[in-house]
Amino acid sequence: MAAVQAVVEPVVAGMGYELVELQAANGGRMLRLFIDKPGGIDVEDCAAVSRQLSRVFEVEGIEYERLEVSSPGLDRPLRKAGDFARFAGHKADVRMRTPDATGRRRFVGVLRGAEEGSVAMELEGQATVRLALDDVERARLVPEL
Image (tube, rainbow, N blue to C red; front, side, top):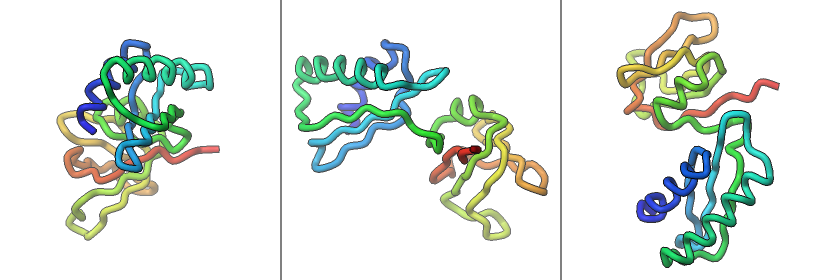
């Protein structure tokens, strides 16, 4: 999977998109990419990335049966420090690998940024907490409709 990501990431970045997530299923026969850019993604963006990657995979000898390119959606996953900084001011749901001193692992609140290896979150009705980026198990934006 790392070899595929090493091919996909520079191609997607070269086209002006961010690779949010790369998934493989069915023994690597099905590849699913989630891409993003400022202002969002539309069907034409997905089609352009799909066409380009199909050509690149043929040249690189990467075998697959199905390629899906999609937007990360309203509940976009947050993985890198840059994601937490970019979406400061938005509501997020963060689950930690290890609990804090009170036994809490899940935090829902408004992102206040990321720096020095930690994420700042303002919890509903509480103070701002700092969560270690290395300890984040899963984090997603909470859609606000």
